[in-house]
Image (cartoon, helix red, strand yellow):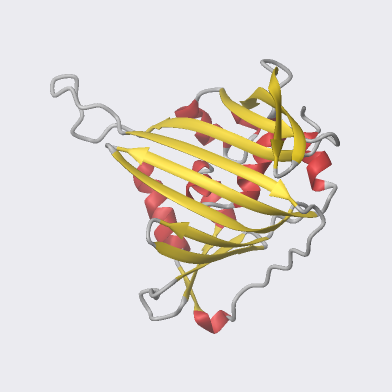
Length: 235
């Protein structure tokens, strides 16, 4: 099971789809993405639909670039960028919230030897797969120390492997307890906000071309500092 990610990465690249659902305070936001990913380098190119908006997204050398249809960055440039390495150094969980598909796929690297259960067989995109329920060692994930404070030591995950041991589908469902507000006290009964996140990734067409290039520098606004401030407010 722990070799599943390496076996998948041996293909070099793949076509992918991602479905994500975030729920908090009675509100739910969904997003659907499709594109290609370089499994060795972590670069990716995607088109993402979030509610009624469409995003063009690229990850190149650990930098996330996004362009939203009909919107521009504060300085009028069409693209924004966020340095994922800087964000991960501050709070690893935020990488998942931003939507770096390589970080999400890498959860499979941290599958433990315990709690592995075969859950049946299923065809995904015409390919026969075996479905397993597994546990992830949170401490082995990027930003694991910070993530463990909110998620606990392990995280349940489901994977579907083909006959070659490669990932065809990966599902992660997590519940994150956000820090209590400054006004929360035993007297007023205020409770920490709870965020539920479900992410499903599927892989196909292994070996497909996955060339990701950064947009021209003159068309990009750097929003890394804004992302870091958001991470600080959540910590």
